[in-house]
Length: 496
Image 1 (tube, rainbow, N blue to C red):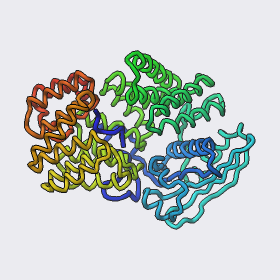
Image 2: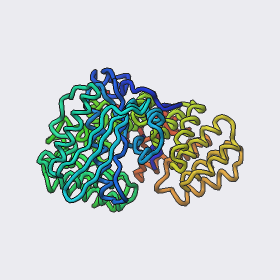
Image 3: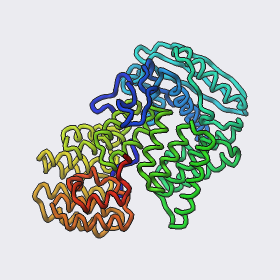
Image 4: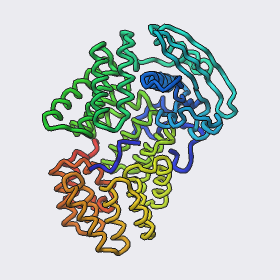
């Protein structure tokens, strides 16, 4: 079972005040010289408000919010805060200066949308975060058929206000080329469903995106999102081998179609990367696709986090830290990204920093899976073993709780309780957590049992094998020929 959540992180000690280039090295992150251009404005697009509790209205409003986030990020000299962080301030009464400071934003875009009887009413305001002063505001009332023209008008006005000339637009963005509002609405619904973590939402997201491409077969963004939704369904909620095979091939076709329709669309390259990594298990190919996507959208936190996962698999931990730090500059309140960064610090034996960053992640999401487990490891590595046991017991997921306790008890010289927790893992999770069982044996310096369980993980296709180069205790066998052979078998050798 994988121990890196699919991704995710904030300036390690505090929210950033400015956004610098998304990466320091083109070779490490795939950014281009354009990524090193001066950033003059950092805009947080806060969730557009709606009246009442209409779920469909909220989905539409959130979709508009995400559109403005993407569109403004395409302006020269402008970076935007990821929705994962900005959406934490939905309907917030906090002062603009407080929100701006927490997000590292120089400007906030606020608004309210109402959609009724085919008419859109939209109030939008751009404010200076530091003092809350209004730089521009406008009330719009348009028929729904004018939605896309309205979006373009707003972005053009914001570009002028921010003194940012509009850059070269891709052949397609997140909207359908044929102007079909129903197809666009279906994509917005799919995007909302894709954020949920259950099997039913995953299937419904696929259906929503499929509806969009049925309405407009040339809708590149919808094809890209459909490919990613299929990969997500396969990797998180597979039904059977036949379903996996069918959905995998459909995902490949959707990703290829998106690239054919709009090769300069970052989502198309991202979809290809998702398929290569999750279905084809071509990790070097996935990195190449991610670098192409980052060349198009260099500050994108999701892309940087996806790249970090691949770098971790290749054992490129310093580069992974760089990518995660870059992701945090535009997604400072992402608990999963902070967790990922903390776990890499743990692998690098920087235990105080790992503890600090994991605590940050838990302050944002107290029940974040695995965060308490890895925090316990960082603590017992600092010889605070009794405290580590207490922390491990707070882990919300039983599997990870037993994993952490087996190690924490062992570090505390409590062999009996450590063995009890290990046997729980073996009895209940031999088929889905063989990699973690191997990790417990690695802590005990029992390399025979460790390699036995790593081989079991390979046999059962445990995705956790993708992270053995950074796993505590397992990673120290990196020069062992058996370890090297296993890594090569997983395709985790970076391209030259």
